[in-house]
Image 1 (tube, helix red, strand yellow):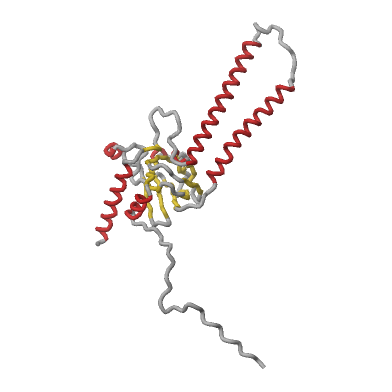
Image 2 (image 1 turned 45 degrees about the vertical axis):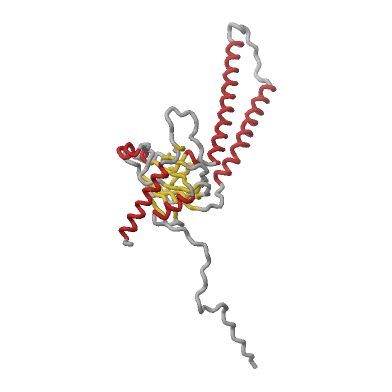
Amino acid sequence: MTRGGLCAGFAAAASALWSSAASATTLGQPTPRGLNLQPPGTEIMRDIGSFHDFLLVLIVSISVFVLALLLWVMIRYNRRANATPKRFTHNMTVEVIWTIVPVLILVMIAWRSFPLIYEQERIPESELTLKVVGNSWFWNFEYPDLGVAIAANMLPEEDAQAQGRPYLLATTEPLLVPVDTNVRVLVTSNDVIHSFAVPGFGVKEDAIQGRVNETWFNVDRPGVYYGQCSELCGINHAFMPIEIHAVSREQFEQWVAAQGGTFAENEPTAPEEGAASEEPAAPAATPTR
């Protein structure tokens, strides 16, 4: 097969794979009048959502309690209801309570947040390594071990409308990742500071020139997830979307092959015929007189 025919075959295969992935359920996408976080695609994001709900209940409870205290003070101790105010400066019971209760609240928050931070920052043993490079104003994605590299620009508005894809979120070259796979992500930049953020994954990592930051994810729900650069990086900051398709392992392997990549073989190399199996013995030492 000629080089041109091989490239055409890769392009056709990639187009077919993208079409099948595009029909997958869109999970990580903003919705009109949405009130909650995006549907999670990773266990980390589920934990973040649970922690968010816990904090929301805690914050609302504190706000309602403080509001009730303010209303009680305004009604009970206004000039009309209490014409002769009492004169005192300290109340040991109240001071102990307002010292201990905030400490207990902080302990509760730490009890929920520290394990979550540990899980986010601990990079587990990974099957794939993904390199993400921010540019002004597009993304480069690379699987160094697989020989796959793509550049993802924002899909023009007319193309997005024609394909029925979300403008400002869809990209010219979606990135594919396999489900149920630990993916280690190396994030850096070629110029200014960017930020690789995918809300559905619970991932947000700064991309800084001359520095490599690390994060990870393991997507357990197939679908299409969107993100954007979340660091104010310049005039086209709003036009740096991220589009990731979480697909089955088989689809991912087909996509890698369509991109011209390969999976490294782990089989040991057989020794060549005729090669000596053992090193020659050292000559015996000659005794001296």
